[in-house]
Image (cartoon, rainbow, N blue to C red; front, side):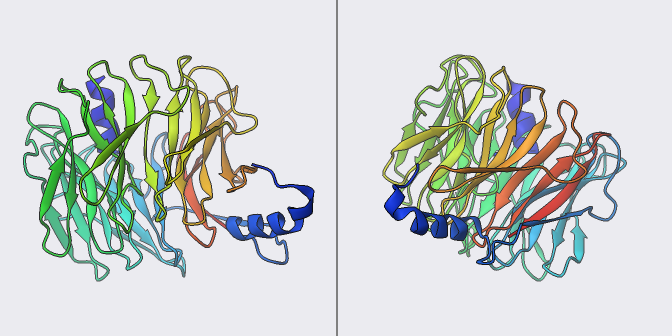
Length: 386
């Protein structure tokens, strides 16, 4: 269990009545970012310069801003990680955080971008210790470590997301391999650390924030904790530090099961998967008032490890993510605020088990980014535009 959670942290996701049908259609088109002409979305694929082409290597887009800047990381032929930023004009800038190691499994992983273009993430040094960074829009770096972060291999600081004000949320592993949450406030970089009530205290357990979209403009943080029985539970940390815990209806109570919380939008809506008692992934949306709606994408498999995998919810309440079918292939989906689904596959995506399309983030205008896995197991980036 500890190796699974340490590796995860290092790399680090309704119908209207007939009389209102026309209005519903218009709202759905707006929420999905479709043009008034009904034009079909376009999909552009891309690779970061230097990305490897072997199985597991390639380009991993993590986030997209409202201005369609895409950031993420790529894994090169030597299995070293590097960050990248793809501008709206399609130019790609690659970068490495100062101090990042250049050995296999080391390097720079970009995790979140704010509207100003500041990027946060983590880098792994030559001793496999993790550290946080923020890359300013002008390309300058500030490195940081959360108070109490361990200095052993696979320990350290994992920065997950940066909000418009520059506040960063994430988690850190201490010297006992226990995870804790943190908030790094801007502009002075002061830290607040926290633990969710009920979080376990054994190695590999503790408090985890989401990745990419775990903190919103109001400084609310979404995450999850692993209890003493290795069951996952969601939490919401308010600006004043109050923590509310929750479980999706139907979430399993066995080890490795339960509720995750990854993405929170400006309104306070949260989405992520939960794992049921049969180890099937299912989606949920937690409204700002705490109401939880669960969902499954049509076509999602019902075997262990299959199912629905929400990753992000944008300002309009549109959720994107992927689902695994009964053959183990991944497909992309959008869930509109009224509960209707649109599914898609990126051209070139492989059709084998573990292959397919993996949307990871959607912005307010309706652009979606993520990656696809080809028939050779290599990863490639994509942008789906309305």
